[in-house]
Image: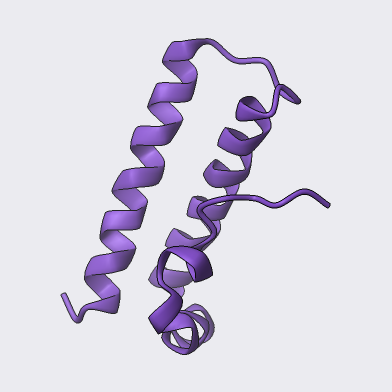
Length: 79
């Protein structure tokens, strides 16, 4: 299996335990994390040429991934 960049554990290496606990105990956070992973994997498939997509589609997905990451970061930081 190839390496998938931008996994949450890599993005927040100091918060891996908190990520795990929030995924188990916070339904909203779990949904955010699941959506982030789905979009992240789709972006990776596009980047590696496995899945064709327009530049516009790739940009939209990257923006969604960044917004989700920002929201996840805010939760991790108590916001």
